Image 1: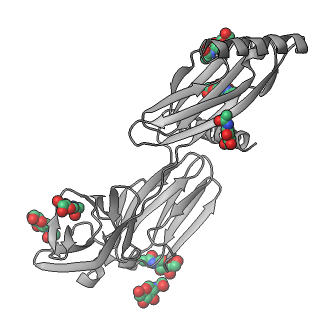
Image 2: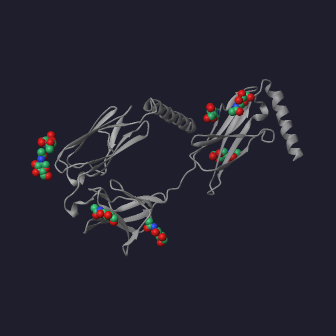
Image 3: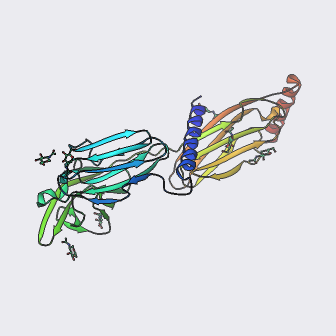
Length: 321
Ligand SMILES: *[C@@H]1O[C@H](CO)[C@@H](O)[C@H](O)[C@H]1NC(C)=O
Ligand SMILES: *[C@@H]1O[C@H](CO)[C@@H](O)[C@H](O)[C@H]1NC(C)=O
Ligand SMILES: *[C@@H]1O[C@H](CO)[C@@H](O)[C@H](O)[C@H]1NC(C)=O
Ligand SMILES: *[C@@H]1O[C@H](CO)[C@@H](O)[C@H](O)[C@H]1NC(C)=O
Ligand SMILES: *[C@@H]1O[C@H](CO)[C@@H](O)[C@H](O)[C@H]1NC(C)=O
Ligand SMILES: *[C@@H]1O[C@H](CO)[C@@H](O)[C@H](O)[C@H]1NC(C)=O
Ligand SMILES: *[C@@H]1O[C@H](CO)[C@@H](O)[C@H](O)[C@H]1NC(C)=O
């Protein structure tokens, strides 16, 4: 039941994805449209600005701050969404992202309202705690003026850190250590330091998603029996199988976009194919292993006779071992 719901959901996602791809790329063009179509705008304090995002299904704006600031308005109506700034201040600077849920497409616009005073250089966009789930993370020291020279310092000691990518509307992105950092911005001889950012690694146990499905768990002799063992978004994996006619039938492996499928294809099932199908998936990189099983029943035409033959077959196999 769960598996079938998951499969159904996945099909739905795939359908959405396909629809998204078909609709969003009518001529292989760009997905979402921004008007004005700029990735960066520089505004004067107290001015107004409006940008419209249009897609093919529901779109909405993600703001740089967790909460909506004064002077920023979002008006979403179906496949278009309006982002309006009224009487802007340096605090409204940052990256605004238009997202289309169905197609998982997004477009960014970096809005800067340069602050005059050095106190108005670093834009407060959130707490000074960076939870990173992978090796890479982002120190969100966003500035109101993209022309500032910004550098990253590791604390304590204020050691300059090189090799990370800086985007004024986002911050420094790259491999971070579990320590604390701060940013420094300079314009000519003037310099200002940001707040302190504390980096913590959060360990998220990655689960390997294995789906074992069968064309039909109860079938008649002569019908096609297919058992799929599918792993999603994975690195290299090994499949191992156990099922009644394992010695005679070799499972096949198929590499599909974002998943790997190992499957057993039996053209004409016999009663001897009744039993438990066990698929074990082992990841080669990390030492993770997931085992799933499913029970198949093949109904014979001459139930008693065939059952007997089957039993004898199994007996013989046992004797041989
Ligand atoms: C910005 O919009 C507000 C409200 O609509 C208006 O009162 C103000 O005059 C506008 N400012 C500019 C600079 O156009
Ligand atoms: C715009 O903001 C300034 C101060 O930031 C304020 O004095 C002015 O009245 C505001 N104008 C409007 C149209 O809201
Ligand atoms: C992380 O720590 C290593 C070893 O101390 C150092 O070489 C590296 O520069 C640090 N990276 C960052 C981004 O702080
Ligand atoms: C930023 O740094 C570069 C090189 O160090 C320098 O040429 C440039 O003038 C600086 N810009 C500002 C705004 O301080
Ligand atoms: C097995 O996977 C293939 C390819 O994704 C699919 O066409 C087929 O319907 C699947 N069969 C079952 C029983 O899930
Ligand atoms: C499974 O077996 C059927 C019947 O022999 C065949 O038509 C089909 O192509 C096979 N499927 C795969 C994916 O090998
Ligand atoms: C099949 O899976 C169930 C639940 O995951 C488990 O309890 C059972 O032992 C498994 N059977 C075999 C034959 O692996």
